[in-house]
Length: 429
Image (tube, rainbow, N blue to C red):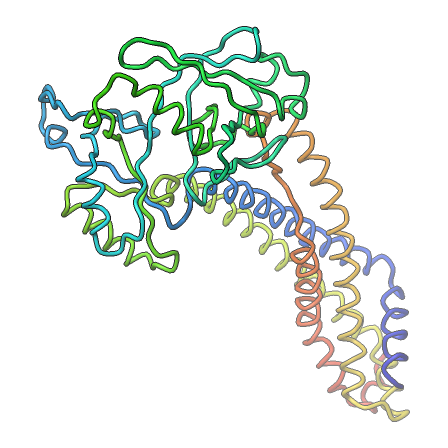
C-alpha cells in the first residue's frame, strides 16, 4: 500500500463510524473555535494597542519635565515664578524649561536629540463664516501618528500650514463628510500676551479618529509650520526670555536601547534635575490589564484543546479495538507495522483537520458578525477598534497546531495497533 492509498484508506476509515467521528470532530471544533476567537481577540486588541502607542509616542522618545522643589513639600505649595503647565495628560504644574535646560539635556549621556514642546492655547476654530468652536491644540513628534478617518498624515517638512481635525468637529464646522473636510480652509484664533487676537488660516489635510489615548484627546493636531505660526502669534508682546519657556521637551534615545539602558538614562536625567517618562510608563497599566485578559482567554482555549485531544485518543482506541481482526489480516497479508502506524495516525490527523477547519470557518463568521455589531454599538467610543481581527498566518497556524495535536493524540492508539500480533489479532472475538 503506497502513500496515496494510505491517505485514501485513512479518509474512508474515518467515516466507518459516523456518530463517533462526528462527536470527536465536534469536540475538536469547540477547541479550534475557541482558540481562533481568542487569537482573533488578541490580534484585534494588540493592533489597537499598536495604533494607540504610535499615537501616544514613539518607542525611542521620552517626555522630559523639570523637577520642582516645591512639589515635594507638604502643605501649600511655595510660589515658583518659573512654574508652568506641563502640557502633559495630567495637567500638572512643573518648572519651566529654558534654553539652558535644553542644552543640559543635550549633554546627558544617551540623549541623541532634544525638541522643546510648544504649548499653544487657542481661542476658537471656524470654517468660513460659520460658528466658532473652542479647541485644544496638539502636535506630533517624530515617530508619532494618529488614526485617520480621511485624508493623510501631516507633513512637518512642508511650509504649508496644515491641520488634522477630530471627527467630532467635522459636522459642527459645516462639512458633510470626513472626506469633504479634507482640503478645506479653517481659521484658528489665538490671543497674544498683549491681548491682541490673531487669526491664522490653515488647510485641513486629514480627519483624525479620537483614539483611546491620542496626544491631546479630541485636539486639532498641527504640523510644524502651523505650530510655529500659532506659537509666534501667541508670543506677540513677550520678550525672548519669556517666549522660550516650555512645559516639557521630547528627547530621543537609541531605538536599540534595552530596558536597563532606558532606566539608566532616566536615572541620569533625575540626577540632572529632570523627570523622563516613556510611552511604556504612560501605558503600563493599560497594557498589563489587556495582557492579563488575553492570557486568561488563551488558557480557556488550551483547556478546550486538551479535552479535544482526549476525545481523539478515546475514538482511536475504540477504533483499534473494533478493527483488531482487520489489523491482524492486514499484517498477515504483509502490511508492515510502520504502515499500520501511519494509517491510524493519518486518521487522527484527518479528524483534526475536519474539526479545526470547521472551527476556524465558524469562528471567523461569528467573530466578524460580533465585531461589527460591537463596533456599531457598545464600542463606538473606541473608534478604530476591530475587537476580533483574524491574521491569515495565525489561522493557518491554528489548523496546523490542531492537526499536530490530533496526530500526537493518535500516536498511542496507532502504536498499539502497530504492535499487535497478527495471530492473536485474527483470533480476537
